[in-house]
Image (tube, rainbow, N blue to C red; front, side, top):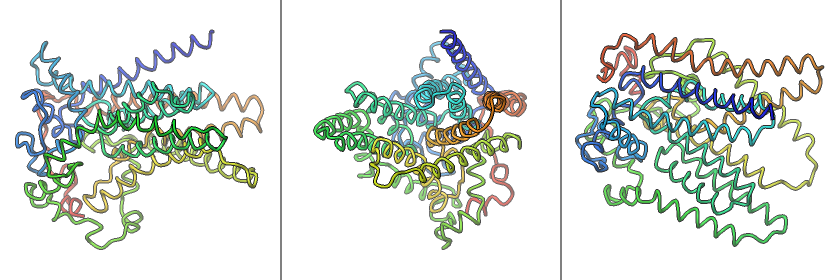
Length: 481
């Protein structure tokens, strides 16, 4: 009972801490100091002013540098942001206060994400310290924390990813009861209407769902009828909740249900010359191979660095010791996974039956890690060289699961071969790492964001950055690379 009370108070402290960090960050950050916030806000403003959804063709929200609008893509986050702004307009007309109200959507998504991440942690790991390690790695990664503070689609996609994984775990516990199937369908729908890079979780859901019933049938339970019945139930609810967007796109954009082809056509027509798709020099149209970009460019180091955290408009790097610390954590997790895989491979009995539930669970998680990185890589290779870690961010929860699992395996193995004193040191070390992770998130607000923006007089005014400021003096070469 004492332990449960302690955990309860720790959780209250944790949620109060992250809420305080995100609210302070959202208040400190001036308008458009988060990537693409201005273009997202134009959609919010349109919905607030006209009370209807914009089309991608809407001139009022067009960005004439890039030549397109984000209304071609799913805009559920902007719909909710507009609702928050409309509610705030009952109390204030201050421009920044209204922006802050819209940002509360991202903060709310962060809180929901944190709640599901905490539940997943307690489900997948049996030791409280390891549960907290996974929770803090998922929630307090500086780049992830940043996403929960300004107008974007990433925050809702992260929330949806955690929801999907949680309801898949619940479904495997209760044979995918009807309530769980409905909640899973809602989670899929939110994912679909938030961010294309998170669509790997749709494949994850299919794989885990299929693997669960495959294992049941392998054990002699005749349940394919149940599989199809519940599968079509989930599909039907998803089509009902999310299908309308793609039907709308079909009629608006001449059959282009994703809107991406039409967006590209608009960019070609309206963008400034150097940013037109046909004028961008990519590794693909220069005849360079994907391996060349992977190993001869700064793609990998830039993605890894900005996955950990590059704040503001890709402007404010973290301290070197933060990158080093996260690098050591990731390296330890990867090493633990490799050791565990090697041990399991050696111990595996020839001819032993595979548990399809576990197999497809891991296939699903690996898919959720691989898909956003493939999309991120392909976009930089074939469309526009932008090696940014936030494009890979949908993989956050499964990635941190494997990192935590690897660390946990190493700690157990070392603990089994060492004395009580060493086990105590490892236990205290784990707690210190958790505190360090939380401290990094707080440090970003107090020592990076606040000094950068404390002298901004009007945070509702968009700061216009020159291309030289954003990309350096050789920006034409970088943009056209």
